[in-house]
Length: 221
Ligand code: B1M
Image (tube, rainbow, N blue to C red):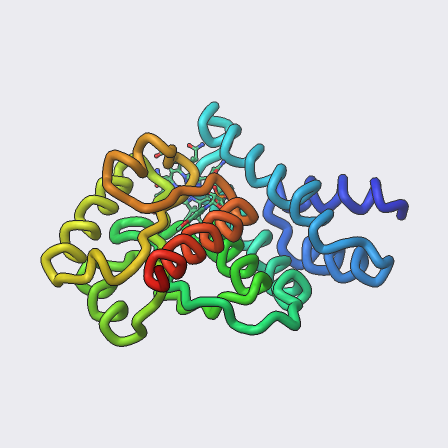
């Protein structure tokens, strides 16, 4: 198979949620020295975007979304150590979670991998994280940055609930807050009073580094 054929098959098999085949193709592609980023950005992510488009059109339903998501997650397990490969020292602590009411985690996990790859220590609270859990973990782990992910318009309001919980616990000024997820925009991030927003995993790394640098410069001034 040529690299183009591998990418096409990876896209097609992810689309139909054929997890064993997706895993085999991922391993095969790596054996052929294809880049993990190429598999991610030229096959796996576009395939899930197509899954979402088909769901919106009514051609796919939740089970199809679920099996496609699982197939991608299986490939991510193989790609994770390669994407996160780094010799960099820890540059900061990032506490991450998908907000209460929301079970999407593929995008959040990808952001975590990229953050780890850039040298952040990531503490992942998983999905359906309630405001109180964010608060108790900020107290316990003292992260530099806390990240809230939301993937549904119906769960985005949890950002505000989380911000209120941080405020109430006296933690708002202790930690930088970043938000993200498919339906989130810069305007929405501003409206809830977050310090930063990023549309994708690599932009999150850049933004997180910027915000951390600014905060440290302020503290040392
Ligand atoms: Co859901 N789902 N889903 N789903 N699902 C979406 C999100 C949807 C857009 C599909 C669609 O209609 N086109 C739609 C939301 C519409 C909306 O509200 N705007 C939707 C819906 C409606 C639902 C249900 C309500 C369906 C139902 O039950 N009727 C239901 C809700 C369940 C719940 O959470 N309570 C549901 C369920 C599911 C599954 C469980 C079946 C499965 C999730 C599996 C899993 O995550 N473990 C699933 C899937 C797979 C999807 C789609 C197809 C793919 C999501 C994905 O993984 N994308 C999705 C369609 C789509 O996104 N096009 C869809 C790939 C991923 C790499 O991208 O998640 O955007 P993304 O992450 C990006 C950025 O957002 C950003 O970086 C990531 C990497 O680049 N980012 C951050 C993420 N977090 C960040 C944090 C940051 C910064 C950046 O700072 C802190």
